[in-house]
Image (cartoon, rainbow, N blue to C red; front, side, top):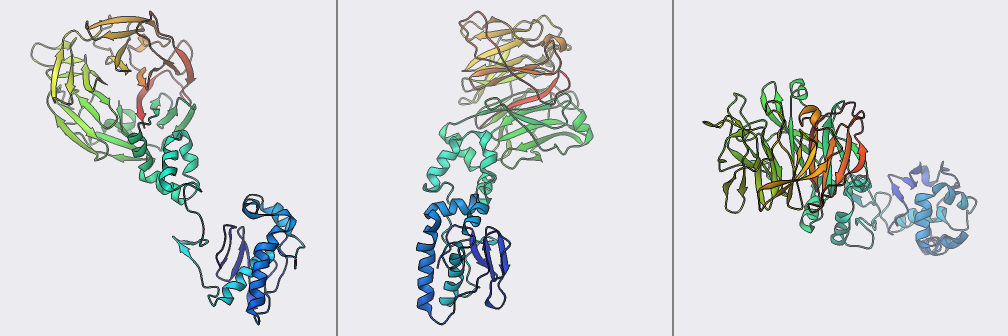
Length: 480
């Protein structure tokens, strides 16, 4: 006899209904604490035919009493147990749940399997015909396609359903499937003034989530850090007591791990991410040497690969990914005769595997290069935009003429700290801007830029939860 999905199963001599059970000593049932289940004695074991008939009556006739049929029983027992049990109270001898429970126990004895007959799944006993599919009525392949299309904001609910969903979440298969299907959502990962833990923000749902505390030493927590995303990972680079390190947040496991370190550790470098890889270039060593070497990070293998050197050594530069190329813009030079601001940019062609120089690519700025932050740049729809920290103006890069067009003012005061403490990022087909305004705290704005118009329109999204100051320490966009 198979146990159906009514959460009612014999276990170690127990009769169990919705988690309530009592020992059956000497072949008797003790009255259960669940409402509506009375004391019953098992039928005599002298006539197996009579027992089988009783099973049939209990399963086919008894359940239909009081208007309960088929799947209604499952729903009522599982979801409204007290009500269902109350309706069965006093039905002894008339079928229903009590007779069904007794009949199942008796049939096990009839078939000679006894109370030791169980079907074991994992570390627990489950009904033999339980449905372990992700979605009843769909095979796993179709169910996974449906889950992959669901919003990431809902994944936390899915993964708390049962162990199988939890195993799915820890495998990372859903994110790999989303990547193959071309489904991406942009989440913001950031650390702002007044916050002691990194947080994640979903612009679509407005959901904020706190990440686990980063297990670094006090030196790393107090030092300047840089961040970038690659695949389902957030890389945070900074200095610990022992030297420069990388901490890696894994979205799949919701944990922090140390490493892997770059081939050439550095700080104040340019970085950019595409769907599958991250790129870094320039920066300087702890001894002050300005670099022109570059590296590519593979998040699946967790390895760094050395790339050809740039034409110019530079620090305090910025990076972006556009037209399938890794661009490095501006910065301060360190080569012979090149000390000071660099107005050139250069890009790495991922197909040809070479660097090409672009003279005069950096937009002019009136602020001093000594205190100025690296250029604030972002790419939307393969078009380059920049935020001029000295004038608070949004600028658009015209590729054909190597010139910049002004698209009006931005609603954030980037000039108050020479561009430091402001986040200017690409968010899918939008620009994302975070920083202090005339008020207190940090505000978040988005814009769908249109290069043909004279001025961009900005929309207020929300304020940063938990921030007590106007400074954004780190910000990275994960597209998964």
